[in-house]
Length: 255
Ligand SMILES: [Zn+2]
Image 1 (cartoon, rainbow, N blue to C red):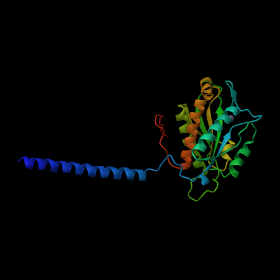
Image 2: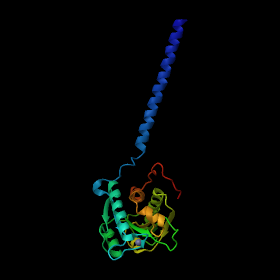
Image 3: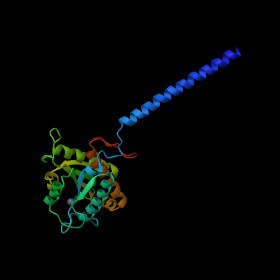
């Protein structure tokens, strides 16, 4: 009887370790299948040599200061933000061409022309907003539904206007979420830089200088970095052509 019990126990132990082994193998198989099917989101899908080029456009410059309110001159802040975007896109493996990296004046057509000559994949212009109502605040992004074909467009590819709208949507959502700003949405506009630039182009109004609290936030380096991180993520998400998960701890907005 004792012998029978002990052999029964060892048989049970054998069966349970066999089950554990089978479950372990199944789990390993599942994990490796998931690893194969989930693309690595941390890596850009392009090689460094053929990384997409993005034109970063700091609004205004030189004798054109843009808006001035609450001690901030638009042309200076737009340049600071553009430099941060250059840095962050560079870190994401994107090539960047700045329309200006100093305080100089450029015609709007010159900015479009630079994107054309560089055969840019996207164009992002950075500006600051104003309103006669000092309580108005938030971020809005412009694109053009009247935009022409994309450079090197292949048959079946979405029209530039559709691509620009997608870029605007991604950038707007990421930017507003990154700094928990009032989300004023995307707007169809015929501004020269979004209509005439021959690639998907957006103009981001990064906040209202006329709103005292927002102007104060915009002058802080930490806020600038978060905001630009959002814009950069939106651009990279657009370039990768597939959605990336929002970073943990950020609010997800429905579009
Ligand atoms: Zn402006």
